[in-house]
Amino acid sequence: MKRPALHWQILIALIIAIIYGILFPSQYELRESSYEELEKKGIPEKVRNKLQSMKGEEFHTRHTFETAIAENIKPEVFKKHYRSIENAAYQNAQVSAISWMGDMFLRALKMLIIPLILSSLISGITNIGTGKNLGRLGLKTVGYYVLTSTLAIIVGLILVNLIQPGMGADLNFSREVEGLVEKQKSLRDIIVEIIPTNIFKAFEASDMLSIIFFAMLFGFFITRIEEKPRRLLTNAFNAFFDVMMKITMFIIRFTPIGIFGIVAKVVADQDSLLNLMSRMGIYMGTVVAALAIHAFITLPLILRFVGKSKPLQHFRNMSTPLITAFSTSSSGATLPLTMNAVERNSGVSKKITSFTLPLGATINMDGTALYECVAALFIAQAYGVDLTVVEQFTVVITALLASIGAAAIPMAGLVMITVILTAVGLPLEGVGLILAVDRILDMFRTATNVWSDSCGAVTIARSEGEGLPVNAKAQK
Image (cartoon, rainbow, N blue to C red; front, side, top):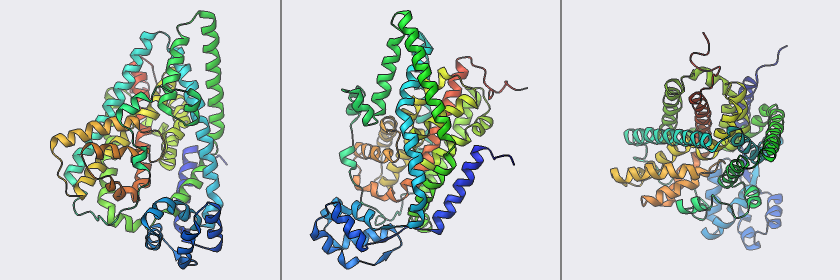
């Protein structure tokens, strides 16, 4: 019997995972083992004693458990220790039995990110050749990313003003958001910190902008040295990149198992989906509708008329990385699969993919930029703040710049929203309104980010004169 194609295997795993998560929802209960775990984590005895009244009581949603904890301890203690208390009370043996597969798969993908970005960018730049060619390709790449992100934000801005999902929103339906202010960075800080003081510390911290800057600098100056060492280093990094792609192909085989473990836990950990839909359905619908317009209308039009390629065929080619991006909510973790699909299925040269895709996974965040714009205006509407045209323009510009600074990891866009809220004087507490549904929407916007990256690679390859299987005139 012939094994189904990988994208079908992933889709089947995704469906089974959703059913599994619904059948075995997570619960929260403080048991004797929970108090022992809290003691090991250094939670003060005074706090543990105050929680004794909750011992043995079952909570079927995170929200009710969180509310009960908040009633038993002081706000400052809650803010400091709640995450540890929640982890100690978490009860879901059925999901814990399979979630390790998702954890291992994500760790394997993240293991690849830095060596893959480093080797692909250096290899790509050395193969591009002259500084003139690099400058032309870089200008096209950045130009595409800025254009698509701007179009995405405009789509979001139009829909959020037409639908106005924040009108009459439930301000009591909010959650505590920890550490956002501490993680907030100004545009100046983001630009300055692109240059690493220690590249090995940048590797350790997974500081993608710094790693990309170093890789581009290193690759460019390889092209400026004498021919013999230039050829030696070029061949070495080409070989390094080829090895990384071989490892990637091996890990890709385990994608269905990994997706099953990841999605089952995400679904099981969600509070009542029907309750979320009833309270936040209009907001979620606005975000998803805007993302759908951008992904299925704007980007295919660019691909068809600028890239002169077949959007539907390219979409089919990208099925595996798109489903993976949706499941993992990480464009960085999906990068190995994206590069493999764009190069092998859509026929884009290694020279183009190794330069545009690692760059895109970090700075091209169409879905994130759109989401930040909609979220900021939703919060303004919920608090009854009527933003002027100038303030909405400020949101557009800030969302564009903030999306570039958002690292390619889950929920980084949530941190960047604080930059936008600060820019237009909105309360940072408003982020708590959208936190309950952020993980779900993160899946949709990450898939949009990856789809945009892949469309950019095809469009730029076409502009460089490459003949691709997905080109409109490639097949008669």
